[in-house]
Length: 329
Image (tube, rainbow, N blue to C red; front, side, top):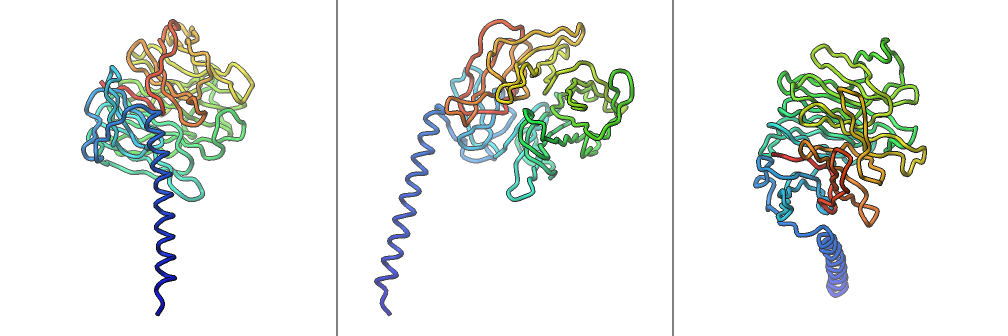
């Protein structure tokens, strides 16, 4: 048997693989250079959410990473997630599963980022939140469409109570009071849940009749009521008195929103100093600063920025090539 043609073909295949691998490695190295220094922890088991710092999804690796408060150290090696959030004793990792129709895997993790529970729901990962105690979690997926800026979207928001193990697969059936009256409509959509520290009260966005509203919800009594119009993706402040949110200020689908903060006692609001449109659920780093993701300089990966919550100052770049920021203290 003549082995020369087979050896030639094998050599060509090996050469092609090496060329492709070299190109991929070059892209990764280039991306990491843009993202700044990243020290890989080596394995998921050695990366945990028990240390203080800013946690986020690293766009270069698709994994959760941690950055120290002063930005001097950036450690990678966390779980692979499309959306991430952590608080108290648990973390929540949303992963898009391969194939069609779109499905999302919601993975509940402990502080060592070991799996506690896994739930599969339809749709594309969108929002993830954990209550301050870590006992109640919520996530939102896009069932259809992939942007709040279009009218052709539908969301599905689930709530999981780890104290009882009870899972609400969809919030759409929660009794809703709109303008003082019980509201029934097939077009109701919820998204962007944010929990208070009592593990009962929560805030979220509801859309119905072509309008968005801020709702205050009660888990124990399973009810929700609207508080204010034109509030999306609320994020409750650590002291429970304010809500950071995105407000629609334009009909331009490319740039419809700006970041605002609402005082819940007076229902007065003020814009934040970020001049660009933010399509994100902001995260409070502390009682005076919020963080959020914006499209990066290359127009693809996002960057994490922060801005004072009182409307003063100017945006600060915290993490290049990052999203899903959450501060663990």
